[in-house]
Length: 265
Image (cartoon, rainbow, N blue to C red; front, side, top):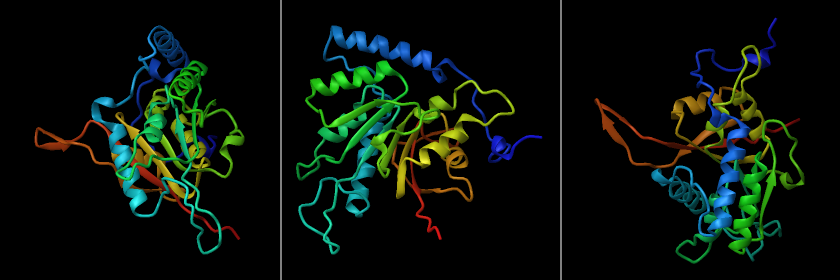
Protein backbone atom coordinates (compact mmCIF):
# COMPACT_ATOMS: atom_id res chain seq x y z
CA UNK A 1 0.00 0.00 0.00
CA UNK A 2 1.43 3.41 -1.02
CA UNK A 3 1.68 6.17 1.57
CA UNK A 4 -0.35 9.25 0.61
CA UNK A 5 2.69 11.48 1.05
CA UNK A 6 4.36 9.67 -1.84
CA UNK A 7 1.67 10.60 -4.35
CA UNK A 8 0.84 14.20 -3.55
CA UNK A 9 -1.06 16.43 -5.96
CA UNK A 10 -2.73 15.73 -9.30
CA UNK A 11 -1.75 12.45 -10.92
CA UNK A 12 -1.76 13.99 -14.41
CA UNK A 13 1.12 16.41 -13.78
CA UNK A 14 3.69 16.54 -16.55
CA UNK A 15 7.05 15.16 -15.42
CA UNK A 16 10.36 16.09 -17.00
CA UNK A 17 12.83 13.45 -18.12
CA UNK A 18 15.87 13.23 -15.81
CA UNK A 19 18.92 15.12 -17.01
CA UNK A 20 22.51 15.65 -15.92
CA UNK A 21 21.41 19.19 -15.00
CA UNK A 22 19.56 17.55 -12.12
CA UNK A 23 22.72 16.04 -10.61
CA UNK A 24 25.12 17.49 -8.05
CA UNK A 25 28.05 16.13 -10.07
CA UNK A 26 27.12 18.36 -13.00
CA UNK A 27 26.96 21.53 -10.91
CA UNK A 28 30.13 20.73 -8.95
CA UNK A 29 31.95 20.34 -12.26
CA UNK A 30 30.40 23.51 -13.72
CA UNK A 31 31.34 25.68 -10.74
CA UNK A 32 34.82 24.16 -10.49
CA UNK A 33 35.32 25.31 -14.07
CA UNK A 34 33.88 28.77 -13.34
CA UNK A 35 36.03 29.08 -10.22
CA UNK A 36 39.12 28.28 -12.30
CA UNK A 37 38.08 30.84 -14.92
CA UNK A 38 37.61 33.48 -12.24
CA UNK A 39 41.07 32.74 -10.86
CA UNK A 40 42.49 33.29 -14.35
CA UNK A 41 40.41 36.43 -15.01
CA UNK A 42 38.86 38.28 -12.08
CA UNK A 43 36.33 39.93 -14.40
CA UNK A 44 34.92 36.51 -15.38
CA UNK A 45 32.20 35.92 -12.78
CA UNK A 46 30.58 32.99 -14.56
CA UNK A 47 27.13 32.36 -15.99
CA UNK A 48 24.22 34.69 -15.26
CA UNK A 49 21.21 32.43 -15.64
CA UNK A 50 18.31 33.73 -17.77
CA UNK A 51 20.27 36.87 -18.68
CA UNK A 52 18.99 36.59 -22.25
CA UNK A 53 15.48 37.17 -20.87
CA UNK A 54 16.56 39.97 -18.50
CA UNK A 55 15.16 37.95 -15.60
CA UNK A 56 17.02 39.90 -12.92
CA UNK A 57 15.61 43.19 -14.23
CA UNK A 58 12.08 41.74 -14.12
CA UNK A 59 12.64 40.51 -10.56
CA UNK A 60 14.00 43.89 -9.42
CA UNK A 61 11.04 45.67 -11.03
CA UNK A 62 8.59 43.43 -9.17
CA UNK A 63 10.44 43.95 -5.89
CA UNK A 64 10.25 47.71 -6.40
CA UNK A 65 6.49 47.48 -6.97
CA UNK A 66 6.14 45.57 -3.70
CA UNK A 67 8.16 48.24 -1.91
CA UNK A 68 5.89 50.94 -3.32
CA UNK A 69 2.89 48.97 -2.04
CA UNK A 70 4.41 48.72 1.43
CA UNK A 71 4.95 44.95 1.23
CA UNK A 72 8.77 45.13 1.49
CA UNK A 73 11.30 47.50 3.04
CA UNK A 74 14.39 48.45 1.02
CA UNK A 75 16.38 50.16 3.79
CA UNK A 76 16.01 50.15 7.56
CA UNK A 77 13.91 53.02 8.83
CA UNK A 78 15.34 55.46 11.34
CA UNK A 79 11.82 56.25 12.45
CA UNK A 80 9.82 54.18 14.91
CA UNK A 81 6.35 52.84 14.29
CA UNK A 82 3.37 52.94 16.62
CA UNK A 83 4.67 49.99 18.65
CA UNK A 84 8.00 51.82 19.11
CA UNK A 85 9.79 49.12 17.13
CA UNK A 86 12.27 49.97 14.38
CA UNK A 87 11.32 48.86 10.85
CA UNK A 88 14.02 46.50 9.59
CA UNK A 89 14.96 46.09 5.94
CA UNK A 90 13.60 42.96 4.26
CA UNK A 91 15.72 39.78 4.48
CA UNK A 92 16.55 37.84 1.30
CA UNK A 93 17.46 34.18 0.71
CA UNK A 94 18.76 33.07 -2.69
CA UNK A 95 18.24 29.35 -3.39
CA UNK A 96 20.87 27.74 -5.60
CA UNK A 97 22.81 30.99 -5.54
CA UNK A 98 25.52 29.85 -7.98
CA UNK A 99 27.93 32.77 -8.33
CA UNK A 100 25.75 35.01 -6.15
CA UNK A 101 25.04 37.42 -8.99
CA UNK A 102 21.38 38.07 -8.13
CA UNK A 103 22.22 39.07 -4.55
CA UNK A 104 25.07 41.28 -5.74
CA UNK A 105 22.67 43.00 -8.11
CA UNK A 106 20.18 43.64 -5.30
CA UNK A 107 22.92 45.13 -3.15
CA UNK A 108 24.52 47.25 -5.87
CA UNK A 109 21.59 48.52 -7.96
CA UNK A 110 20.16 51.79 -6.56
CA UNK A 111 16.64 53.13 -6.98
CA UNK A 112 15.87 56.71 -8.04
CA UNK A 113 16.70 57.90 -4.52
CA UNK A 114 20.10 56.19 -4.52
CA UNK A 115 19.06 53.33 -2.21
CA UNK A 116 19.77 49.65 -2.79
CA UNK A 117 18.26 46.70 -0.92
CA UNK A 118 20.06 46.80 2.44
CA UNK A 119 18.51 43.93 4.36
CA UNK A 120 20.38 40.79 5.38
CA UNK A 121 21.14 38.51 2.42
CA UNK A 122 22.00 34.81 2.43
CA UNK A 123 22.88 32.70 -0.59
CA UNK A 124 22.78 28.91 -0.34
CA UNK A 125 23.83 26.16 -2.74
CA UNK A 126 24.51 22.44 -2.41
CA UNK A 127 27.70 22.83 -4.45
CA UNK A 128 30.69 23.80 -2.28
CA UNK A 129 32.53 25.15 -5.34
CA UNK A 130 29.58 27.45 -6.05
CA UNK A 131 29.85 28.84 -2.53
CA UNK A 132 33.60 29.30 -2.83
CA UNK A 133 33.11 31.21 -6.10
CA UNK A 134 30.38 33.45 -4.64
CA UNK A 135 32.49 34.23 -1.57
CA UNK A 136 35.49 35.19 -3.69
CA UNK A 137 33.40 37.50 -5.86
CA UNK A 138 31.83 39.06 -2.76
CA UNK A 139 35.30 39.74 -1.37
CA UNK A 140 36.38 41.25 -4.67
CA UNK A 141 33.28 43.48 -4.73
CA UNK A 142 33.85 44.37 -1.06
CA UNK A 143 30.42 43.08 -0.07
CA UNK A 144 31.24 41.15 3.13
CA UNK A 145 27.72 41.59 4.50
CA UNK A 146 26.29 38.95 2.13
CA UNK A 147 26.52 35.44 3.62
CA UNK A 148 27.03 32.32 1.51
CA UNK A 149 26.48 28.84 2.97
CA UNK A 150 26.71 25.33 1.52
CA UNK A 151 23.30 23.77 2.12
CA UNK A 152 21.17 21.12 0.45
CA UNK A 153 17.56 22.29 0.37
CA UNK A 154 16.09 18.80 0.05
CA UNK A 155 18.31 17.01 2.57
CA UNK A 156 19.68 19.38 5.23
CA UNK A 157 18.17 21.13 8.23
CA UNK A 158 18.45 24.91 8.10
CA UNK A 159 21.21 26.57 10.10
CA UNK A 160 21.13 29.59 12.39
CA UNK A 161 20.95 31.80 9.30
CA UNK A 162 17.24 30.94 8.99
CA UNK A 163 16.28 32.84 12.17
CA UNK A 164 12.50 33.42 11.88
CA UNK A 165 12.46 33.12 8.09
CA UNK A 166 12.93 35.43 5.12
CA UNK A 167 10.76 38.16 3.65
CA UNK A 168 11.83 37.11 0.15
CA UNK A 169 13.05 33.70 -1.02
CA UNK A 170 14.50 33.84 -4.54
CA UNK A 171 14.66 30.88 -6.92
CA UNK A 172 16.13 31.54 -10.37
CA UNK A 173 16.29 28.07 -11.92
CA UNK A 174 16.74 25.87 -8.84
CA UNK A 175 13.25 24.35 -9.05
CA UNK A 176 13.98 23.69 -12.72
CA UNK A 177 17.11 21.74 -11.78
CA UNK A 178 15.29 19.81 -9.04
CA UNK A 179 12.58 18.84 -11.51
CA UNK A 180 15.32 17.20 -13.63
CA UNK A 181 16.65 15.03 -10.79
CA UNK A 182 16.56 11.24 -11.20
CA UNK A 183 13.36 9.97 -9.61
CA UNK A 184 12.35 6.42 -8.80
CA UNK A 185 8.68 5.54 -9.07
CA UNK A 186 6.77 4.89 -5.88
CA UNK A 187 8.64 7.50 -3.83
CA UNK A 188 7.92 11.12 -3.19
CA UNK A 189 8.79 13.37 -6.14
CA UNK A 190 11.57 15.92 -5.43
CA UNK A 191 9.29 18.76 -6.56
CA UNK A 192 6.79 17.90 -3.82
CA UNK A 193 9.60 17.81 -1.27
CA UNK A 194 10.79 21.19 -2.56
CA UNK A 195 7.39 22.75 -1.82
CA UNK A 196 7.44 21.49 1.76
CA UNK A 197 11.02 22.59 2.42
CA UNK A 198 10.86 25.99 0.75
CA UNK A 199 7.66 26.96 2.56
CA UNK A 200 9.47 26.66 5.89
CA UNK A 201 12.01 29.26 4.77
CA UNK A 202 9.44 32.00 4.12
CA UNK A 203 8.11 34.19 6.92
CA UNK A 204 4.31 33.91 7.17
CA UNK A 205 2.76 36.55 4.93
CA UNK A 206 5.92 36.83 2.84
CA UNK A 207 7.12 35.77 -0.60
CA UNK A 208 8.70 33.23 -2.92
CA UNK A 209 9.94 34.66 -6.25
CA UNK A 210 10.35 31.68 -8.57
CA UNK A 211 11.71 31.90 -12.12
CA UNK A 212 11.45 28.98 -14.56
CA UNK A 213 12.07 28.20 -18.21
CA UNK A 214 10.80 24.60 -17.91
CA UNK A 215 7.31 25.16 -16.53
CA UNK A 216 4.30 27.27 -17.39
CA UNK A 217 2.49 29.45 -14.88
CA UNK A 218 -0.25 26.86 -14.38
CA UNK A 219 2.24 24.01 -13.99
CA UNK A 220 4.19 25.91 -11.35
CA UNK A 221 0.98 26.62 -9.46
CA UNK A 222 0.03 22.95 -9.65
CA UNK A 223 3.32 21.95 -8.03
CA UNK A 224 3.75 24.76 -5.54
CA UNK A 225 0.33 26.22 -4.75
CA UNK A 226 -2.10 23.29 -4.64
CA UNK A 227 -5.48 23.68 -3.02
CA UNK A 228 -5.16 23.61 0.76
CA UNK A 229 -1.44 24.44 0.72
CA UNK A 230 0.27 27.34 2.47
CA UNK A 231 1.48 29.02 -0.72
CA UNK A 232 -0.83 31.03 -2.96
CA UNK A 233 -0.42 32.99 -6.18
CA UNK A 234 0.07 36.75 -5.76
CA UNK A 235 1.72 38.23 -8.87
CA UNK A 236 3.61 37.58 -12.09
CA UNK A 237 6.62 39.51 -13.36
CA UNK A 238 6.34 41.03 -16.83
CA UNK A 239 8.29 39.66 -19.81
CA UNK A 240 8.01 40.25 -23.57
CA UNK A 241 5.65 37.83 -25.33
CA UNK A 242 5.68 36.30 -28.80
CA UNK A 243 2.97 34.89 -31.02
CA UNK A 244 3.35 31.70 -33.06
CA UNK A 245 0.65 29.67 -34.75
CA UNK A 246 -2.02 31.88 -33.24
CA UNK A 247 -0.77 31.23 -29.70
CA UNK A 248 0.84 33.87 -27.47
CA UNK A 249 3.55 32.89 -25.03
CA UNK A 250 6.90 33.73 -23.47
CA UNK A 251 10.17 31.86 -22.93
CA UNK A 252 10.35 32.36 -19.17
CA UNK A 253 8.03 32.92 -16.22
CA UNK A 254 8.54 34.53 -12.81
CA UNK A 255 5.77 34.06 -10.26
CA UNK A 256 5.40 35.49 -6.78
CA UNK A 257 3.79 33.16 -4.27
CA UNK A 258 2.80 34.27 -0.80
CA UNK A 259 2.86 32.13 2.33
CA UNK A 260 -0.40 32.58 4.16
CA UNK A 261 -0.54 33.60 7.79
CA UNK A 262 -2.32 30.78 9.59
CA UNK A 263 -3.69 31.33 13.05
CA UNK A 264 -2.96 28.42 15.37
CA UNK A 265 -5.13 27.80 18.39
